[in-house]
Length: 136
Length: 136
Length: 136
Image 1: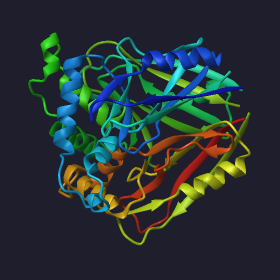
Image 2: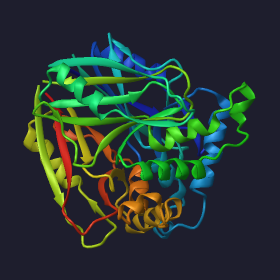
Image 3: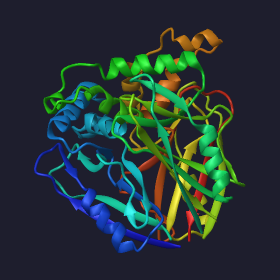
């Protein structure tokens, strides 16, 4: 059994920004030497998500607008702590903070349109994603 | 360590259709010979989901109607590409495209009412789910 | 390769109650002896979720109220079976019933604010979560 761990760092320019990280995940899989296994891609923050969907910029804007509707900016109880990012927590919960991707014959075993995204909802500071590969 | 990979193919008759696949996942687990481990069940498409919940037809209709409310059919930016399935992408994001199921003593270790579903949101064509078993 | 399985039992006093279980997951990881791997934390029920977010009580109330808005109590088709918990199934689907946490050097490899929660939506009876550790 082999395991391999990497951390990706992000510091987005916008408070809300989606970054395609498929290439970086592929590189970690190659570096691991794992031929058959899983790679966990997991945000280490509670105001950022990781998801798999299309690399199409219209759709990415659709997703942002849709999330805005489901988790609007407003005066959350959480803001009594001094924070102003209640909606970012809720967006993290809708999209989920992680995915597990299959590795087959040493490659990410994704469908033709599947791309991996880091979705930042409270950026403009350094944040991390952990990549952990497990397999043989 | 053992690994085992299978692909399930679907071509639903309806554009939107939910298919219970617990039996097929059980079969893949048996075929793998894994006694203790995980099976990843992951849609290879960006307009289909995999989820665990009840095999009760009223509830399945409730889920479809509820998703319709949260991600209505409308004119998404994504449709500028010629697609008409913006809402299918959003439904995929709510339900999530994958689950990881525990295997204990060679069997899926699910609760009494837990069933695994493939949720198609843009069907009537051939689509796939990857099953990957990892363990010992 | 090592594997380790534990079950956590819950019987919440409220119908809806969120319980922080990070400490119990840490203990299972220690007991497993796994240094590098994954731990799957998965509700064995269709009306309870497992999620990772902040241990801040204002935010926990925000999440409950927000879920109430997205999946209101109402007369679902599912209630024709005699059940009255349709909304609990939908809340389970939004938050997802499971997470996979990375283990690095024998510890949960979480970000500074990440805590693991069991979210009960139809409690006041005995229910379970499975913890399965896999790694080396």
